[in-house]
Image (cartoon, rainbow, N blue to C red):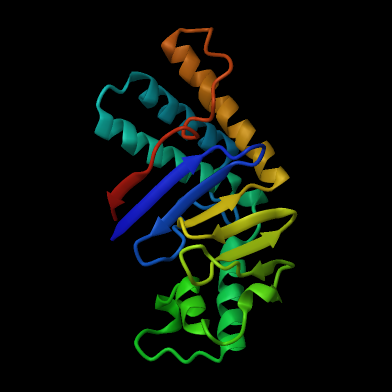
Length: 218
């Protein structure tokens, strides 16, 4: 199964894209509310280990692997302050299905992405003029894409916490997530600089914010 992953800077709010080939969000890289299963000490140990590996790696394939591991660990680290993106996504699917009266026959609801439902809803009224209230306090809007059809934007806690406007699923971080992200990278870069022995690396961009798209099998 192919995965497309892209992390870029977007003004003040960090935006990360992660989409499975099926059209579903890739929850390995997208933080969603969950109870922490690791202690802070365990997180710090793993973050520092990745920083040490990144500081010494020379092989591009290994470097890309570290990049992905770092994003996965970051998603896990943020999860205790994250909105419940998984539930919001499912609520959005249910809202569109109910609104359009769709009755998919080829695949079950669990196999359909939200964009599948939006595609089936095309021609059943202008979804771009509607706003759907979601369980958990979120809202769904469906902008018309320049390429045709509808996209999806889920907003909650003052941020676009999940969206797909033609370039795959991405998300903005909430203020709480941004603070937690800064905490995460402070640990990471302190260890990275220690290994590199370069005190001039005091102001660095987030590790993946300027990286290009990753593709891998999963």
